[in-house]
Image 1 (cartoon, rainbow, N blue to C red):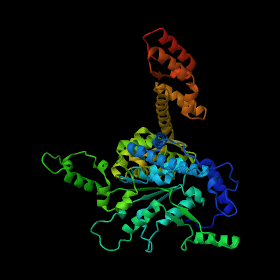
Image 2 (image 1 turned 180 degrees about the vertical axis):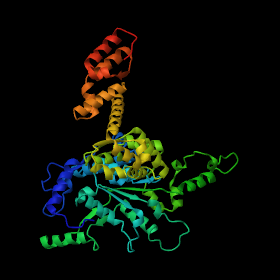
Image 3 (image 1 turned 90 degrees about the vertical axis):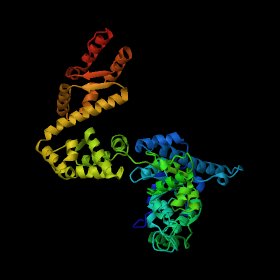
Image 4 (image 1 turned 120 degrees about the vertical axis):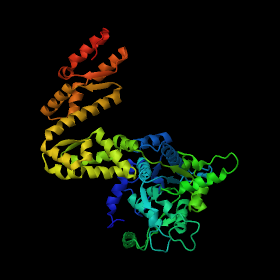
Length: 521
């Protein structure tokens, strides 16, 4: 909740900018202010276009979220169904079509996500909201209680959605609400009496997920009361502001620690008899894929609540290799955060492949999924962040030894920074080889003499080794492709001679391979 009443001109400016960059945007006909004299936005001034396909959404998620392939596919379908439906409703309303009302035959694709901590459940939904361009609110189910009792009110999430949209109610109506720890409000069948944080909260959420109108002004919110006071001073009356939850998409998630036992029990009961195979004795069985509504009801949810969650997604625990892929390949890798943090002090940092492996293995031992990556990185880099900004070190490479023994390796780095410079060049060259292979499907291998010469050229030109390689080998992509096409050779060693005379060396390779001489580069 904001500490002060936001300036109305600033809100209008932010809404206008928001509309320009979002797919759910304000049409060109909208007044530049974005808000009329009555402080409300005309619904028909919005262009609710949505033209993404499930594969487009999944391809975007693949850039950020490692593994969870089935979950990404299911979520992509559900999101496209939901926002295509919204776009169709808007189209019919704009055209005043006499066709059948799409609302009558549509069940909202609210999603229940099941999986252990740190596997990417929250990150998946946040990334989807970012892609679509709608406001996103996250809350923990444990903070809510039934209306009238001490604790949060589920309606507050809807009001928070409006705040995330900078007061733009129309945009907030198409937002995403994500509720974590939903398994904590499941109610055991043996609980008697009033349960203010279980069934009561389920009932409150049920109303939100179906369709209800939430009043934005509340007596316990000083910000909304201040806005109401300002409106009364301006107009002499206060108009009730409400938001309809009909098109808000809800995601709930939890670890559901004992749910697998419930599923096992049901499957075993179903297979009693002669010749039956008792699944509980099998090893490596994925019981979660057989999760049904009856299992969730047995777990402690109301049937009506489960009925409003037609899409169920299971996310699985991440292996050490998965964590390594997150560090290495995810667009949202925490490594970028550390690179930016050191860059703020004018220090370049490179994480070696070996260091990423060690970080991943240590994070896996924490058993908290991808969240452990931040814990391990912070522990390894803490002393470097403190000492290096006040030193003469302008760049370093994070080695496996630094992760294992950060204090000792920091002392070595400060005592001999030139040694680390050589490590940096070697790591840059390794990354260059990998990138060249990825882009051109040709394998390069730099000799030690070539690496040493590149290091000298980089130091002399006060640039980095990558730019030196690009400048020297700018014609090699085309030339090596021709050699590969005519000879099938796809591996080349970059020698010191190639660095000293790149054009001459490439010419020699052409003559050598085109005359079928047995020598190799």
